[in-house]
Image 1: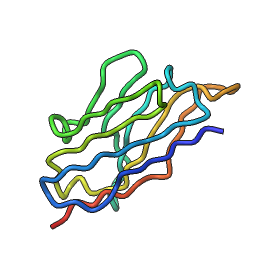
Image 2 (image 1 turned 180 degrees about the horizontal axis):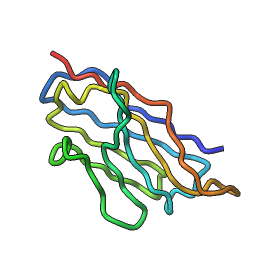
Image 3 (image 1 turned 90 degrees about the horizontal axis):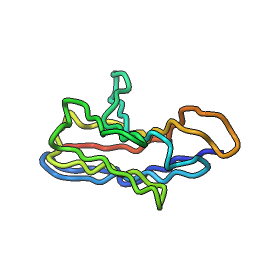
Length: 120
């Protein structure tokens, strides 16, 4: 069973920073594409940052230069460092994985989400 467990969300003032972490289990992490998506109230879920297993990272234009995604294949974790946060970054952030579960097929998996609120 694949599990993605996020942590690190919360309330921060504009201009502040937060660090989100996602711990993955049950998946062959080193070959999985990992990423973060977000969904604001009344809006569609959108990709924020993707870190494939074997190619360059990709960022949404709205977060380039402010957010940094990284992965630790030894710890099966993916992290999103968010700096210079803006009120429009307020959303539920979801960890995403596309890879092969142990003994299973390749599929997409989602975490339960963590709330990020940017407000003064």
